[in-house]
Length: 170
Image 1 (cartoon, rainbow, N blue to C red):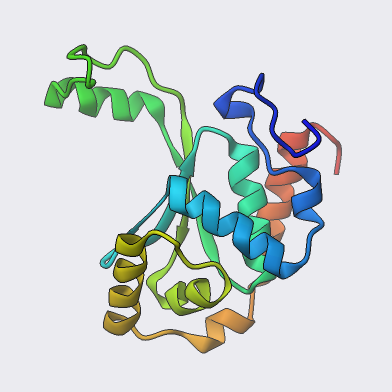
Image 2 (cartoon, one colour):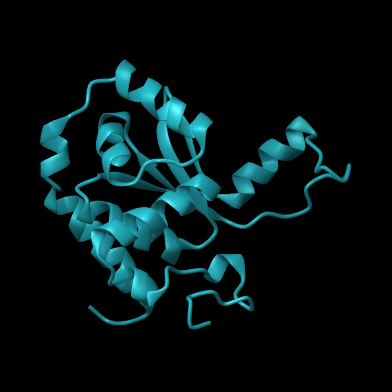
């Protein structure tokens, strides 16, 4: 556990190791690159996304990205709504069984206008994801203004959510 890996932790309890949260920007960028290589996705038309069942992990990533000036949107994916859609589509798991249950998950979306800043600060090591990122940057204008200003209402909501989920009083 001294390296931040807790093998007994469930996926919905994951969080970024304390020493990463206090690291320099190069280390944080490399950590985020590995996280986005494994659990992130990118589509040219929708931008960059990271999904997890751990709300705390997603909120921590949001803070780290804000430190780079990258604006994100946090979205809750309601498990019950997804289950209804999955049952209607009759989609099966690789073992041939229908999905029995799901957990709520959290999505962190980076807009297409922040793709260039994401590429400079984090990026992808996986070639096809890097190629999609390049395509996104070429197709959509990059907004330098948004990259330098984080609106107060975004910061206020993020901090309030983190404090609320920690169980501590404001």
